[in-house]
Image 1 (cartoon, one colour):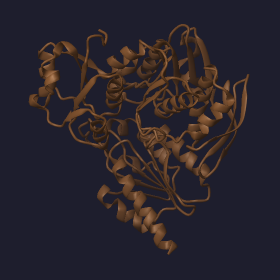
Image 2 (cartoon, helix red, strand yellow; image 1 turned 30 degrees about the vertical axis):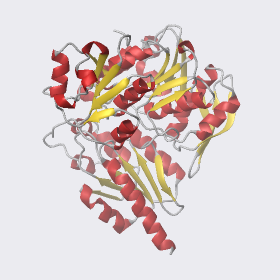
Image 3 (cartoon, rainbow, N blue to C red; image 1 turned 90 degrees about the vertical axis):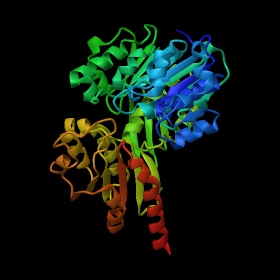
Image 4 (cartoon, rainbow, N blue to C red; image 1 turned 60 degrees about the vertical axis):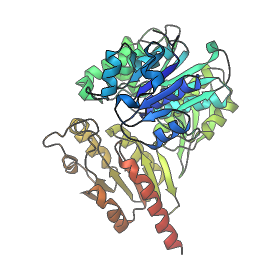
Length: 470
């Protein structure tokens, strides 16, 4: 199937971060775009403002007439999160509509363009966003499908340049969940990490490694691989495809960073790859892990003949992605940072960077575990990484798509945490608890609905600081 003959697209689950990027692309390409989602959100509000018709009722009458009466010219994109008894989904399945999962459609797009795919257990959203920004700021024609909202563009879809189809570079975040990345057609691949996760899908660590290995073997035989050094070691050099392969990492890798300096609002470093050296780069999204992400972006930019001057400008002007090491308050005496981290390695990377930035301040972490299975599978790792903080506040597990598992609660993490203070706090009691302690450096972590507390916490901290200033 191709998009030929299609004039309208309807997305079931249009408010998802990946689905909405596709919706925006189809809209940009001139298709009539509509969709359904269970609940309104700021993202669906934006899509409606951009001209898309969205319903929040799973009823046949909510389907636009142009879709319902035009099966031969409509494409239905759906997410497996849709319930099996969905009235809309079953109508489309039973009446000859062309249905495709998001991963299938993204696969079709990447089959038509030169594609840079960024995969990894963690780091892929920031890295893909950074690559896209550096390319776009250098004037390259791009389309980027991202798994987060970039601060530079306030969108999960980045468009740049009016060139022929053959000249456009597509940057896509390649998601390992549900093995969806195996449908892509990459010319270049960046693998940021290959740590175990999504064991509810893969079963065990060996199978997720096999999934990543299967993915990197999809690379075009004239293409390139950029592998983070530990990910490369985990996959095994002898199992990689025979293509141009470059290893990057903070230390002792072919592409590496030296002279890293952690500052309160930025990190400075030198880039070296054995052939080229760029000194004194400044990255205003702090974190050792973000310096490592920048190495991949710089290497790709150099391979696409972008000048050092443009690379330096692209790196320094990158503002990051919402909820990825996002600094909301940095007033000297008090700091508030929010991060999407929901895996032990992500938490370790975040907190070690915060420690380097503010070595003399007390660090308080509020963590909302995400998924019962992930909490169960990585309990020891969570406790160890959270021990980097002086004080740890645990919220209840955010279940997302899962039902509770007997005996699996946030409390199982408590015993293994080695911190001066550790406690379980109900979400509704969090603000009063913070008001009692007024932490010097506060970090909120998690992939659930903890993000709803972020503006509340930021306003509270700013108000407290203003009160003391008076």
